[in-house]
Image 1: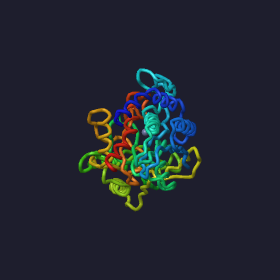
Image 2 (image 1 turned 90 degrees about the vertical axis):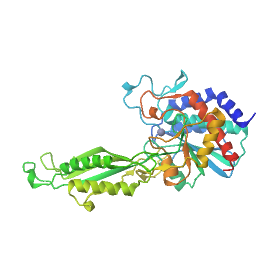
Image 3 (image 1 turned 30 degrees about the vertical axis):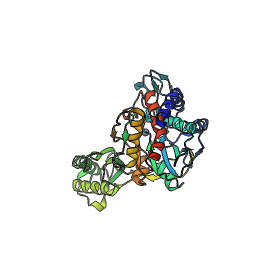
Image 4 (image 1 turned 180 degrees about the vertical axis):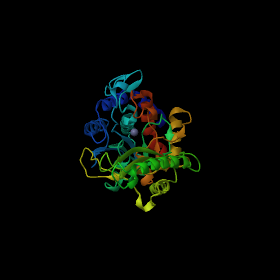
Length: 407
Ligand SMILES: [Zn+2]
């Protein structure tokens, strides 16, 4: 039997196994920075699947490997989840992990433990077929993505010197091939006023009114942002997400204002550009000189479950790869070989770990994952078992397609 037929049959044979592994992971709560239990579970599942190696890195991510090739491809799933929010919005227990009606039910089923379950099955299939091609196939189950996307990979690449040749993110794509997404950053603006007694506000300078004008300037900046040249990623955005105003008392003119912004970055936009734009617009709106306005990128300060002292600024660079890149072409061939139709090639709306692997470190990457992006962070989250099967086959075949292309 041809390799694509063998892989398709094995992915089907392991349908229930894959769904059950996802169910186990959903049942094991793993909010960001509290992933230890699910990491220990995944180590066991990788061993059971026959992986050649499995370890836990310094930040707490699980790194599994199948094969001994001289090139490295890494399939990545973050295994932390966001919290459940208001339980009243859920029609079922978010941690039930039920498998029924062709779906796995619960928090993290689509975002994105589904990808993790399909990866484990892919590793099992590769072992069973005795894959001995040019790639070492890594499966990374990474931590803290929901809080600080890419930090797990920045750590792996910069501190543990693990830099694969190719990356496949298994975040939900509805089994489409994605080749980019906008970057993002967080921006804090600090404005100063001069306080005075609230009974005579004309003696002071109000930081509150400056903040109001600055917020409207951010709205104007958002309207002025332009799309990228080919409009693949679309236009960047900026919005005010938090504001805070303070003074010496509730009977005083405010002398301090903080404005917090979420900025999405399209192709060609980076941190320096975004900060210069904010300074210019806020300066024009408030009359303050640009050098007197503090516009900064805060740091991510939380510690992970291993308590490793590791941080980064809240900047997540934009990435994309061309449609004619060999990784995209191998993925298209892979999909066609398994499912006899053309895949959709597109992009994510949200952000993934590829901000680090590809935005920062320029490793070519694609996305292909089970479940829908719209399920992410929403109540009543589910994933389709059929998607899990499609993805486990797709992941297992990809190293063979790359080998065929001599890439
Ligand atoms: Zn996610």
